[in-house]
Each structure stands twice: as structure tokens, then as C-alpha cells.
Length: 231
Image 1 (cartoon, one colour):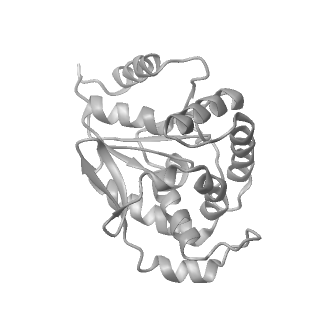
Image 2 (spheres, one colour):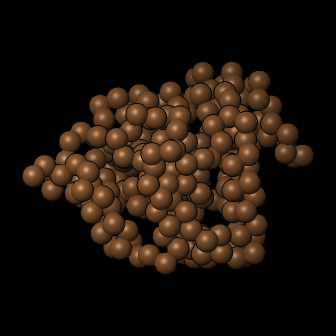
């Protein structure tokens, strides 16, 4: 299937499988996959490790903003796909922990952080033919994206998926804690002042509560065929 050099923007709630879906699209259609969530998680890990988040949860935004000026966070491609680095250190495993998940929404709500990540993403997406997932890709980062998808799923379904994923990676977590984290992130993401999670007017909704990955890929193949396939 031949399609033009477009940008595919995938937004939606946490733990809906946006990254897995985007990676599958990238692999099938030879697109570059960009994980905006990994950048936000990377900044969060950086803030945690450098003392910019106090024990009471307060964030030293001024110091964090100054430090971002020299933060080398980037993607590197390899046999297993794109990985996230700070300098020469691969942080892919560290940023997927529940500890980072607990802090990422408040960090991602900061205007200075969003400006930093959006700048990075636009640089990566300059050549187009990319698929990118996050919270505000189709509304803020790439409002001109040719295809916008908004993903959603039942919170308990998302919590079960996320719990199984974390346990499979050796993390000792409970379903109740993960569900609470997801509900808190949904609220913060939807109510932040800067670029809140919202569906772009021209986005297509994908509710994958009861869909397998193959069913989701069948869905996107049909969407792309209908809209962009060269006949």
C-alpha cells in the first residue's frame, strides 16, 4: 500500500496502547516512530534524579527550566526500535517505572517542559513521514497532521493491561495502585492549563477496549486505504 509522506498524530488517554499501536504502524508503513511520552518521562526522571521534585511533591520549576537548556535527551534507533537516551545513557527501562508514572503528569503540565518537548518533537518531525503518539500531538505539536487519531479505552481495562505489563518487567505493583495512578493521570492531563488532553475536531476516535492489536491494525489499514492509498 503506497501512501504519501504524511504525519500521523495519535493522542489519547494513558495506557491505551498508543505507543504499541504507533510502533506497529511505523513498522508496517516504513514511518519514523516518535514517542513523545518517552521525552516527558525522560524529563521527569531527570527532575527526580536531580532533586527538582521535593518530598512534598513541589517542583522547582525555575531550576528545572534552566537545566533543560543543556539537557541532551534524544532517540536512537537500533535492532529493537527507537530507544530514549540522556547523553550516552539509555533510560528506556528507568522511564517506564511506576515511580516515574506517578510524577510525569505534574511535570508534563509545566509550560517550560511542554515547550522544550514540543521543540524537540518538531525537530524530529521536520522530514514528515512520521507517526507520533502523546497527549497533544494533533492539537498542539502538529495541528496540521494529515491523520489524527484519538485513542480511548475503559479505565479498568487500561489498568489491567498496564499492571500485566509492569509485572512482566519485574515490577511489584497492584492493580488497585495502577488504576488509581491512571485515574489521577486522566484528571491531571485533562485539566492542566497548558495543552490539556482533548480530542482534535478532525480526529478519528479509536476505542480499543475490546480490540486486539491485529484488529486495530485492520482498522488503521482501512482508514489509510480510504484516505490516502494511491489507486
